[in-house]
Image (cartoon, rainbow, N blue to C red; front, side, top):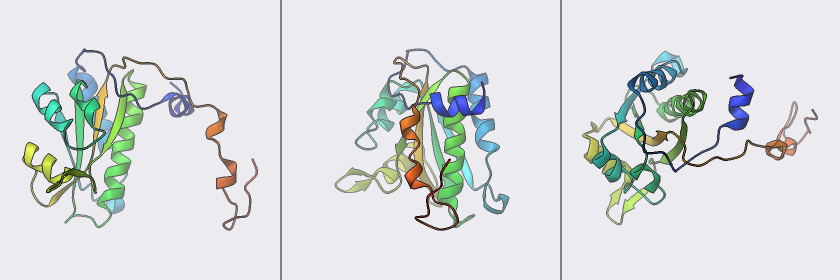
Length: 179
């Protein structure tokens, strides 16, 4: 599939078929993540593949808006060692986006569950909840969880309305970029 077609057709999906993701595709998703660029090539990330149904149900309780993980056949938790890079957020975000694009290119769908700076309960962050659940070391920060599977819903591709040309400038802020 052509790259710009992937960008136009990829949409977040939170309802999945009850069908496991084959190990070969999981490997491809991780390859896409490992191929992502990182600052000074420090590659501070660590990816946790979760396909255990009970763990997925527990992850779905990490924060409000994570419920789609309960029915996803697969999740990849994106973490990074903050002691290795001061831009771990950016590095991990790029890897997460590579997983999104690769998912769609492989016939899967995905959605992002933000964990960093989110709340699990009155006395616990979503990050601490996930860290405890998955036994993640303290120096690793949890950015997000990507829910992945075969879609049980179909969404239309993005239309031209997403091209907000007024939000693009040329040579200086506010100077219109005209395509």
